[in-house]
Length: 124
Image 1: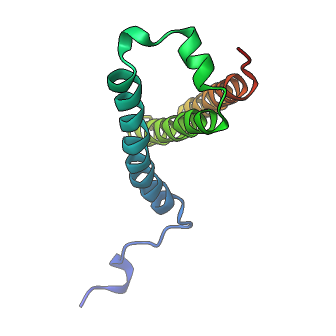
Image 2 (image 1 turned 45 degrees about the horizontal axis):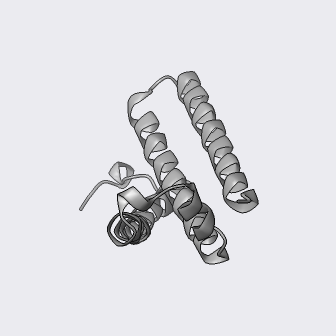
């Protein structure tokens, strides 16, 4: 029997649990998205055939725009979550941790907004 005070405290929220699940699910989704992207772009089309016309022709279809948008979103959110975990593990002073996360979130937001802008407003 364990003493009452020695039990592990319950977390205040389930954020870390959801973060853990997100990393696994997004990794599986990215394996599929990036795997097909590499297969299609590099093996089917061929590296030598990829140029501006190929990409602009590909983005004529809403399917490919959404495909690339989801690749962007999953990759950056997966990356942001991973770097957030590294910050939690290695930056101990609270002030520096908050600063590092603020820079990370701002940078990630800017990249996602700019990438989304390019994907959805590109005209050939």
